[in-house]
Image (cartoon, rainbow, N blue to C red; front, side, top):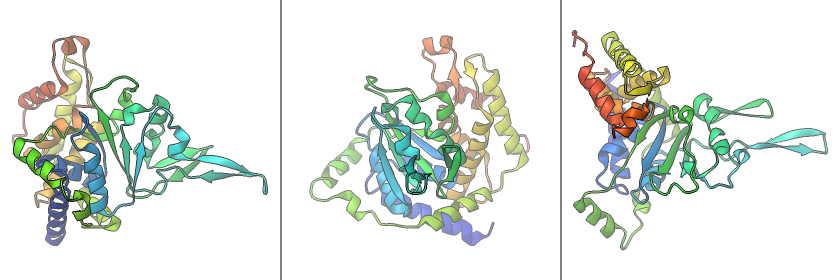
Length: 319
């Protein structure tokens, strides 16, 4: 990859991080990993308690990336046809006319509180997230390129929520938690909301074509065979672990490699290192594994198990 390309992507991501940080204060690492996910052309699940800035992060990103942006507020009465569209009969020519849904003309979709809607409506996003198209009445309709979903869900208030099925969880490249800010950041947040709208100061840094070019550059980052085998070893270890009922899927293994490439590019490198993989492995894989009932009863978390996997799986000798 040309040095100028690496430098351009690095400068753009630094500028985007700076703009989003005007709204999401003190959470540069979360912003960085969300940007990695966009470079890797993957979907993002923000899973955290209410009020920590999940929606604000998505809105700020939509502004600074210059992508066509839309928001779906998921409630129990949202229907699949609201998302993917529907056909209407035209009596003048005796044909059905396709009426596009909310995702058909947008590049960045905020699926706000996705667990507040029915399983049937959640499933309407499955084809869109995996194949970047929707099928209505047997006819496929391509979605814009790129197409990225940022979904949010709250960990509290289980009444009226529907747990996302594992098949849909596996389609999210990463699951991230923003968490509460530290004291100094919270003071800055409070002060910043007193006299001005922080969104008003967020500038557009790039446009949709630039996003596509950055995603293409990410695919060109080199990852050597020993590191690919290391990812395969981690994945295999998850499937053999006695505390894991369902291990990391092949889709998850590919996601680790793509996210590692994005991590390298954002650090001004055109090659992946071991630390690029270790830095993102838990964020990419914790939501993809299912623990056994015994492990859950013991209070073990997916993060605990994945940390042990990284500690126990041998790193490539050549590195």
